[in-house]
Image 1 (spheres, rainbow, N blue to C red):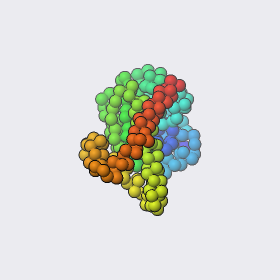
Image 2: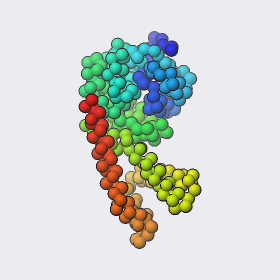
Image 3: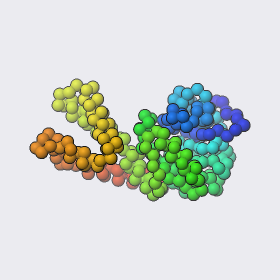
Image 4: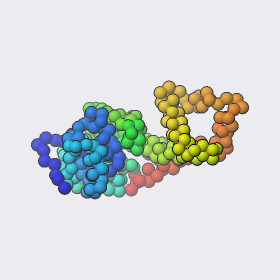
Length: 277
């Protein structure tokens, strides 16, 4: 396993080269914010590394030393929450006082991160989601003490390059997890159910799935691009006595709205549990 050797600080270090790290870094490279040679990553798994290298492109660097990755200008913490403490312990020697630590570990608080790195290290906590893989992510970030305006703007540029990005107080991130972090799974379930309904109504499976997928994507784009409240958009396609109002009435009777509201609450509660250890 090669170790990076350079006289200049690398722009981005990565601890954990899994799917989310690969999606984010690939998006940043594609957007031109970074080049493959600006990235050095640490991951003990050859399988994870090979996929990461293939996704980022020739020139991305691998290191056998977590501290070498931590010596970059920005350090992306992309390991699972239960491994954060171990990863930071092995990387601490490489951190300098101005290394910007950006964590995407669900539930791991800024205070917890700050306690595991040298005092005064700037820390930003981010909640991204998997559609970052296709440049359609929804990311919210919170900055800890000591993060400069320039660093805050840099984080906004990074995550804005892979979709929607917004800054919010840290106490909202568990709710963000419930809506957007876990939200793609809810929508995949909706797409699957719509397609199954189409098949039951007589559509071929492939056509039903394509219709369901593009309907969900198109409806989301209508909300995002028009700025119109979803209730108003729904009313616009709900004719008196028509098919849509009949279907919407059935959704209400079956509790779809209540189920989604409760799902967000449950996911947010689980995020809080993870944050408590």
